[in-house]
Image (tube, rainbow, N blue to C red; front, side, top):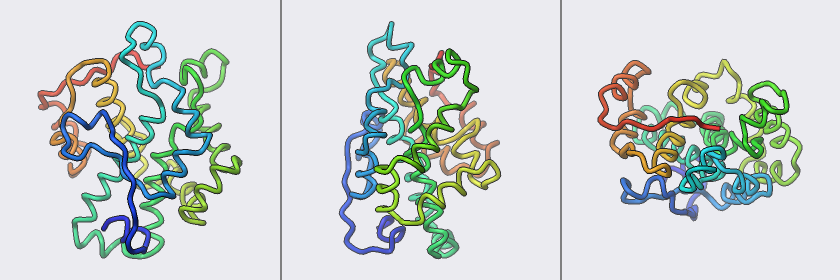
Length: 239
């Protein structure tokens, strides 16, 4: 129903795959996407992330940390999707975001999370330091891939011809939801904290806790939930 509303299409056939980080707490521990979004995840640029460990340095002494940047991108995409599906249940939100421009913005935010690590290389942040590049060089490379890699550009155009243009807007630092994607508490961290902790065999954060964070009214409420939570997540030395 949500995707039919978002894409203004009927009878959309969704595809899904199991997300291991959700399997202990969710009745349906899946990542959901349309065939067009699946095609994006299957581009060479995204498949490359399937060969790049999320915790490369830690994997050297803890082989359980075998999850990849591709796993993380799919999980962060699903977190953003979960957020919007919760909003979609509110009639006033659906009415306020019923225009094509608003729906395109929603789609762009979802695909921003899906593609946010597309520029990462082996050893990720550590490599950027070794080669002397500034922190965040993977974001510069990622932006180049998104706009110049023909396969990736075609995949985005197949989802929506105006999607890349909308993506540039929602990536701006002054964009309203920017802190939910790149802040102290964001969907990026909401995925990798849970995923890292699970693979490193530390305690996990439950679905109920994640839903509470997503539904929080403001950052203060999020911080109070985390401070009072019995779930203590391992952060450790990430690459």
